[in-house]
Image (cartoon, rainbow, N blue to C red; front, side, top):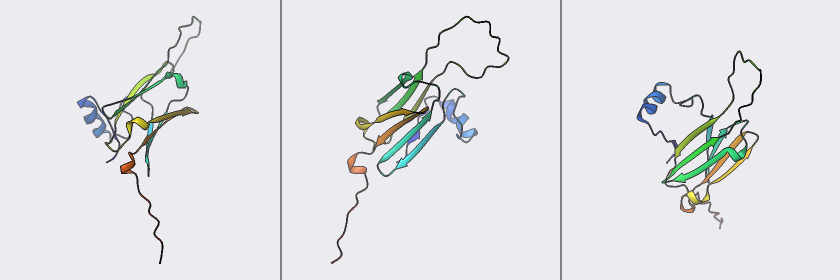
Length: 135
């Protein structure tokens, strides 16, 4: 079973199918890499500029939800922007986890603008390596 992105609204599926689901559903969602290893999965989420305190992760009914919210203060200044493409950022992404994932062993780390979430397979679903002696 593979790790699949959870999509709560039906119209998002149509939208993603139309655009090959290769880009985030909405512009304010960070890019995500999902890697499969022998022992589980790793989700890498790009969120430069956010502190690790801004993140919130929860697992409920085999759905991993990653969200972040950064509070910004409004400062009075006389700066006039001709174009402004970055600033306040908040997002929420959800992923449906396979039954083979040990939801009690989820770990997260934040380094250099990348949030890495380690998802470990349950012991009975991890590969067994057996050494056989030649007689």
